[in-house]
Image (cartoon, rainbow, N blue to C red; front, side, top):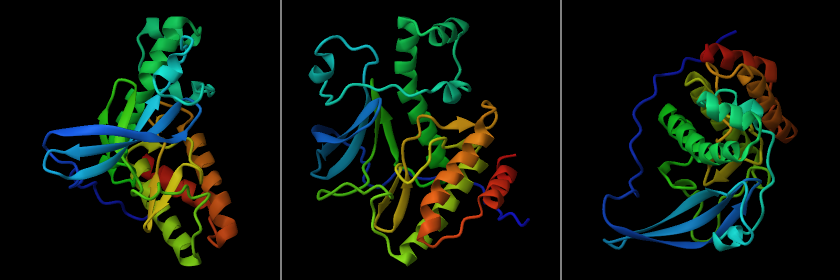
Length: 258
């Protein structure tokens, strides 16, 4: 099988809209709500007059006191995912790992702290590798501040809801492959990829939601998760005219990973 060569990742500069000057930020409300986190739209006004929009993904407390979620600005309660397969490669102290495995109060605190750390780290690595992901601006106490995909009128739709032409579907698949090659060449697997965590905005396909991303070198489930990711996206692209040979793409990506 021919494996397309992957050029070494070039250093990627921070976006031009990220200015080095004083600023003020205002929350404009909730963009979306997930099982364990909510995304808020942030307006950043720089001293020089420029304004940019950012997305602030904030993780909810895992064991909130009565009224705490509402006081912190969250709209929904938390529904926990079964995350043990993703946490296999996380680096815990022996005490923390025991607490996580036995679901103690301390273990919940460890997980609550680790999700934003993990997401920021994976976003930075994906960005550096050349994958199409939101630019990671900074990690906050309870989440990650990142590039907002959209404009003042609307947020970018998920691929599952976007209405693409035949040509746009083909272009989206090409971009999908480019990002997957960049990720796997960097030793990473998204781990939860589907048309619901891909965005389409102005001819750009963007991968989002990376806290559960895993590494080939630290997680033995990485190949299985990669194969599942491919099956999920192929199930969306296939009926729209892109014939995806999952096994062929899987073999190519494994070659890049190893």
